[in-house]
Length: 254
Ligand SMILES: NC(=O)c1ccc[n+]([C@@H]2O[C@H](COP(=O)([O-])OP(=O)(O)OC[C@H]3O[C@@H](n4cnc5c(N)ncnc54)[C@H](OP(=O)(O)O)[C@@H]3O)[C@@H](O)[C@H]2O)c1
Image 1: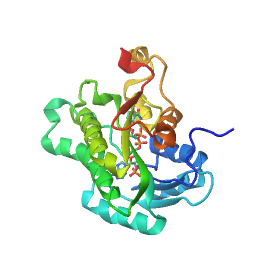
Image 2: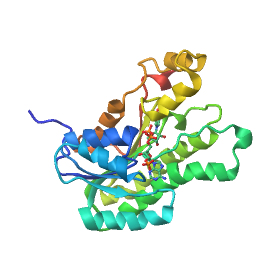
Image 3: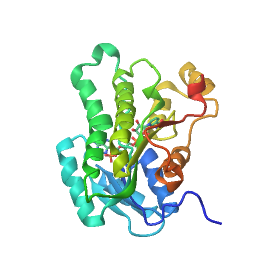
């Protein structure tokens, strides 16, 4: 029997692949046949992830998306070494919480540099002729914070809303180039980010218990997010573009 999610020999760049959701995306995509290129700042972590992948033809690229001017150089080197892309996942992100009174413009800019400008610049660079194959599909890792208000989340939430908004525009602009783009919006997911949250608030805290009431299917596993990403990258999702898919255990129904 043939799986409807089949990425055999599709070349997918994953930015933010050294840990958490990006790391799981790399593992899952390799399991459905993709050849993945892992990118992030920590090369040692990328090498560890590389060891976990199925199949061959994978690679790594050290890359800092905060330095947006460096993205073009990195993308060119990736294409020269591995060939044109069939897809990209952008999972690089920072989950900062900053109270409003400390949210100076430069703080917002730091968050936007990674969560938003790095994303749009990476998309801009891979959408150039010769750098992608027909049918390329892009997935950004957004967040339910994109559509929900929360204390101390002005910078983070706005950066994710900006990503989702950009995706709707890019989807329309790139459709005639046979490029589709979507985002996945996770709620709280079991990564180091969640470990830090539990360290701060404690498992039994009102904050965490309140979260679990609203996110009533529990805390997401990285698999839950990676499976949605694999679907959106696959030909099975060929008629889907410009959307943000919540993968949120019910949170946005509350
Ligand atoms: N975990 C959650 O509950 C949750 C919920 C909703 C949305 N999200 C979103 O999911 C995405 C992944 O989060 P995660 O939980 O998997 O966090 P994570 O484990 O901290 O992963 C973040 C990734 O981003 C990379 N990164 C950070 N700054 C970078 C930079 N300047 N240049 C290149 N790469 C950079 C990190 O690699 P290096 O440090 O090696 O560079 C790492 O691979 C983020 O966009 C986050 O906002 C997470």
